Picture 1 (cartoon, rainbow, N blue to C red):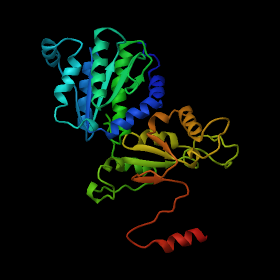
Picture 2: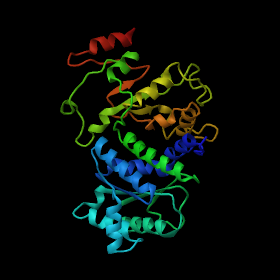
Picture 3: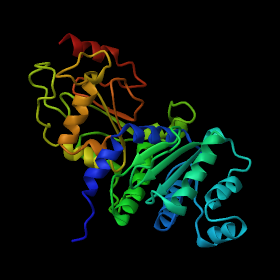
Picture 4: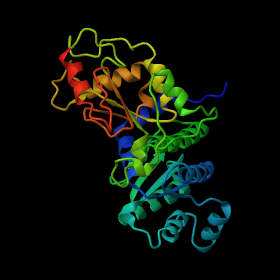
Length: 330
């Protein structure tokens, strides 16, 4: 069987790293995304740019073809063609709204030099820059976000790079297409949730936050994690609540899953030397669902639905306070 270097494990490690979290933040804020890479990564960049443009509200672009490369190389030289391409494409654009992503398998030589040269040009011109590479790149400007895959095979690196671009799309609140399309309504019916189809303009969200309508917020204790002993020793001691893990995996195909829990409050005391954030994320990783979670927070996130074991539904437009008060007084 073809060696893929523990692909899933590598992927999980990358998307939970601080450098990847920063990459996701930059991607969410960018309006224009420029992707490039050498060899097979040039094709990966082109594929990713097409799907980012198709699936999100961002303008994504890649060099696209060998014609572009050879034309610029003919005018310039192999080590400057990415930089030159960027200069052409950035004309008239606001640098603060742009992002550059380089996909690389090389750690030295002309290909590597061309990539770093372009990234340096971008960062010097106020453009957020990210390098996704098979191996760590030394002597990189510290302003460039470096995401290392820590793999040694070309095909593993290239597959990871493409998958990571879909993760960016997913983490920004956009839907990645499924081969087996199922109606969103059917999925929610399994959880007893009624979904209503509403137009974006009917939603009470600030301009620019429409994508957060794809957020689905789920409480941790009592909904995902069995919290039958209460605080106990402060750890995440319980087993998964039946059906919760499969529900998260299924819902993540269409929704941006956000876990909210007081366990990760920054003022929570350390337990066994670990923060609540670390404890919750370790539990999610142990049960193989961390990669399906976009965020773990102690704040109430903006979301289309909230799944909570202690929630009381307030129904509008009717004044439902009498019903709420009667429920609480019981």
